Image (cartoon, rainbow, N blue to C red; front, side, top):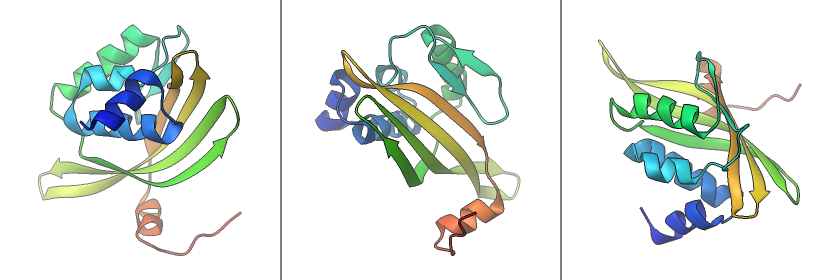
Length: 149
């Protein structure tokens, strides 16, 4: 892990830096780096695609430790949409994840929302909510036209 990303995760950095450290931790199954991205608050929340809500550091850590038992997650965060203010930031992200199937590696799409708050320790993740995406989401990420509704 680069020193800049480690500093972002442990000191605060900007939301984009904390997010980069979060996704790097997912790829490397690095639970210490991943948890350094989270705020130290009782009400932080994480929802994995199709999974239950995990509330608090201990529950979130346990959920990611279970995921990391199978190794890192080959995930690429793309198409970030940002809404930011002085003390909070919300990033909606298209995650492309490579999953192993009987037919070999396949690309899956996950839509995630990451919420950051500016804390006394710097910017920290307070919510990560991920849902299964669709084939259309993957095609849009590949450069298809965007339709606003």
